Image 1 (cartoon, one colour):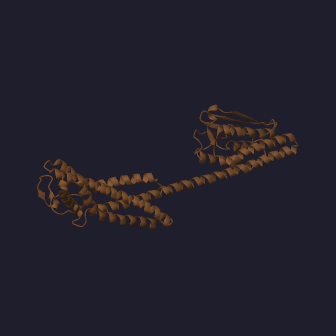
Image 2 (spheres, one colour; image 1 turned 120 degrees about the horizontal axis):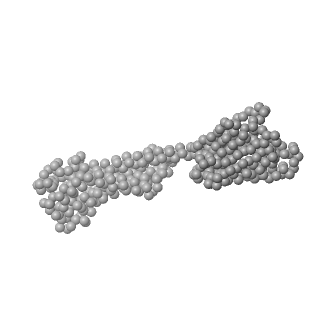
Length: 400
């Protein structure tokens, strides 16, 4: 069951109170009539009071016992029948039906015993007679309006007097009504439980799907980055620059460490991402000495805002891949924040002369991760000779 034991008892208690009051509605109305009748003898008034309280408490007890028994029988049956819903519900329904029948049979005995103790000795005989008159609907009753004696069909004491005339069936209709209401209520609770379970299962599948999609996107980043990094290392080795090659390897190990940690993170602060980018730009500065420059201008208020991890990496790689970088054509990449909570990466477009097949995997990957984790789209603008990408920043903590 999805509900806690405390919530189950609260539902059972509330339902039992409502059923008790509803089953004794006619008695409550009669009680009001007796209080308004100033001609009523004192002993009869006291008897009516005792009968009312006994009936109210009895139907509360009857309802609550059936509710608790059903929940217990359902849990036990769920284990025995190994989550077979039909058999489990059948066992629970059968259990409360048998107990309800036993309680109904015990009602006259319990009523006589209780009323015999609570009534005064002086009105004991009168109390017993009144109990029989109310529960078995026999004899004649007191007319609360005129004080005269009338036939039973003119005074209704309890729901049973309307539907039943059998002397051996005291308050039969009320007991059946309560039993059926408990059964229907439990079926309704089962439907609500199943609906909640389906909703939770759907959310679980949705989260797993998002996680799988996210892992697939992250899987695209790492091989792509490793390939570019190895190309840079290969270029330095070919040039025979041993010191720069060693510096590049040391920096590359630090960058790899951050990327490997990205498998356990989704959103990071802008400050964390910038620390990684500074390490990565160092690698590029070694590879493109005096050819590639970076300008980073970040407002302090934006440092603790969040964005998907490794958001800047594909943008910088995209710039390096598609633009000419040489002594004759140096390139500057600008990274800055705006007043609209946007992180902007901008560069002057210097397209390479050779024909290059572009599949756009880097930008597609970043766009997909942003839609998945942030629910917002990145903005791309290549007008006026500049390629500008704007990334929304979040104030909220990490979601996944």
